[in-house]
Amino acid sequence: MEEATTPRVEISFDQCKGCELCVIECPKKCLFMSKKINQFGYLVAEYSGKDCTGCGICFYACPEPGTITVYKKIKNKV
Amino acid sequence: MSTTEETKTKSDTISKPAGFVEDFVRKPGKFPKVTHYCPGCGHGRVHKLIAEAMADLEIGDKTILISPVGCTVFAYYYFDCGNLQAAHGRAPAVATGVGRSNPGSITISYQGDGDLGAIGTAEIIHAANRGEDMTVIFVNNGIYGMTGGQMAPTTLEGQVTSTSPYGRDIRDAGHPMRMAEIIATLEAPVFVERVAVSDSKNIMKARKAIRKALQSQKDGHGFSFVEILSACPIGWKMKPTDAVKRVNDEMAKYFPIQNFKDKIAEHQPYPPRVTTPDNKKIIEVLGVNKDVRLFKKDQKFLDNFKDQNIKIAGFGGQGVLLAGTTIGYLGMETGLNVTWLPSYGPEMRGGTANCNVVLSNKEIGSPMVEHPSALIAMNGPSLEEFGPTVKKDGLIIINSSVVKEEYTKRNDVKKIYIPMNEIAESLGVMAAANMAAVTAFIAATKAFELNHLLELIKHNFKKKHLIEQNIAVINKSYQYVNDTYFK
Image (tube, rainbow over all chains, first blue to last red; front, side):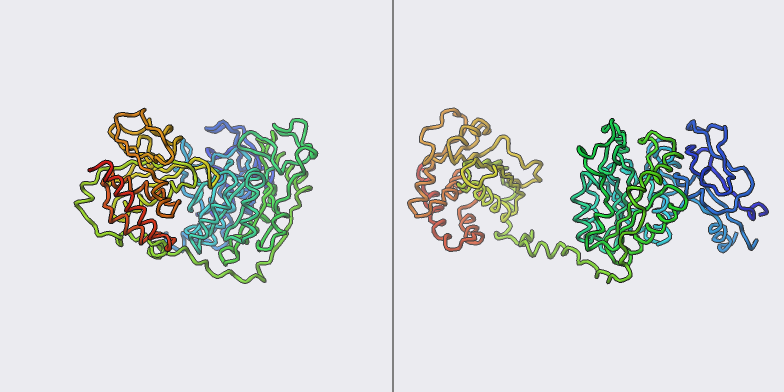
């Protein structure tokens, strides 16, 4: 469970519609638009892999229900 | 993994709220995980906030969301709650019905600006004024998004849309309507706020407002109104990132983001509504208890009954409709299935009137009588109009007080001439010509017994002082038909 302690964002590749709203809202600028195209033909947003604080702002910025999942920092590791 | 561990893991993630269904199985197509909304659509953000609030307030099981006409017509794909879809603008009217017939439920009227601010203006204002138990989520994007970006009542001055190609001209189209302000002037709404889903700060304010509105409805405070400024990138022909900026830079200038009313704290919760009386009570009030009939059930009579499709026609004021209900009641009180369908003009007297009566011992498919087995023509024009439609070997009863000439157009039907007006007049009740007509029908068809009619009149007639004279008319008419045709 090592990785669960680090805050991170998961963006579903196949559910992203490439609207870029999460990218402009992220306070740490740790999301970016990739060059990868998904099943719909959208260029998807991606997590750079560092600096996420688990604040959840991108989750609320995203108009899709389940595209973004934010893993917050777990303080007391089980 | 133990239960506590699972709960812990869950609370450590921010993910798809439980107010959504797991997979959008009601949505057709191959992508049950994503919405039908365009990229960057404000509806998605609003949906997320509602779904989250529904889960957190634990109201999903008693929430009924009323979908409007607009892109959210498909809201039932997504939310894990009850749903009804209303005609354009009528969501508050439907929510009123849903709320009143399901006390304690949470109703959400989810509407756009074309829906709420244009075609549904009357509904929203009166629902708000009555303080109905509902939370209105009013998504304002200043445009008719679903139909291709036409001008809405909330379109900003000068804004170019497909129906305002030179920009909205306020001399022609009026000023953009500030609905939250209008609603806030009314007495009943307890909470009215305008928010925006334009940036994270505003989304958090919107989240708070939606939760507060739903909580207040849960606590019995009735009507709340949350207007949400929202982007329609496709309708505005903008990139999503520019569209959300426009919400803040242009829309919010005209539509201030603020609270207009919050009297939840000082408001006394409404007591639960009294629901409509139960079926038993309704039957009692209407006096239509199927088990209590005026006449004893006669199975032989019911089994042998031949279907009657009756058309009674004349001019308004002749008692055409009452003649129909009288025959209808005879059917009901003897245990038959009955339909009665009137057709008349707006005037109470002098126009044409007719009614269709169907009597049967089986279920009745249609109340329309296109080819009557019996026609009662109270005047000439009715005979001319409906005479040709009567079934072969059917019956035509003609009011010979009005129709002076013999009816020669049909020789394949039975014709009975009876001077209805003269008979009624001779007994001092001009208005009872219709009873002569009903009697002639019974005398000619023997569908019912004369006694049944007499009993019914005694029992059902509202003007008690006229009962005796009407009975005299019935007796005389019966005798007339019998003497003239069945001797």
